[in-house]
Length: 217
Image (cartoon, rainbow, N blue to C red):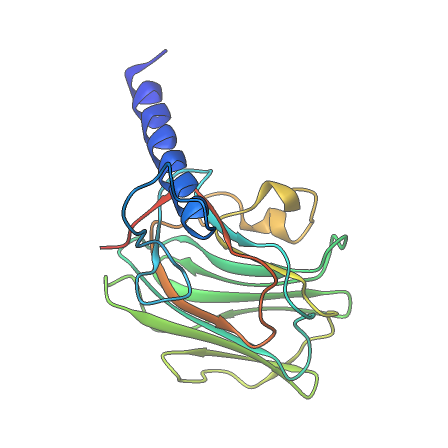
């Protein structure tokens, strides 16, 4: 085994232990992990998405479908010019998706529905290591994307059904068969940065699943 592969394996084992502790800390049994975790995508602690293929945060079940009248928001910071921020999909659907990513430092949003297909690139660089806010709203059949509370484009028709799960940081193996999610692979695939203060108006049914992540500094 090459030295670089050994180092990657050590990192994966280390982060797996961290996430195991995070999962245990969200339950009553804390006998294995001591201290309190500072990994939480929903609070100001946030989470650090690492530059490994396995690193992501997955919310696999929303309390109700993310459809018209719902919204989500989160903050992120990174010095990497490329990477997947988030995507939302529908369970057992291989087409419908909405996503946000960085391409050469610029925010890029995708809409992939059966009867609506669009790409939007916002002409403001956000790979400066500072915190930025993303907000996505579904209202009156249209989608509204905002970065740092500014709307750069006209509202666009979103014909997708109600999204049921959300992933942050890269593609999740659960969605490898999705034609739309496959577009997120490659140089813009893996994020390297922090996400915090995630909120979604649907609510979520279970604690987010953290894989190969760390504390955000």
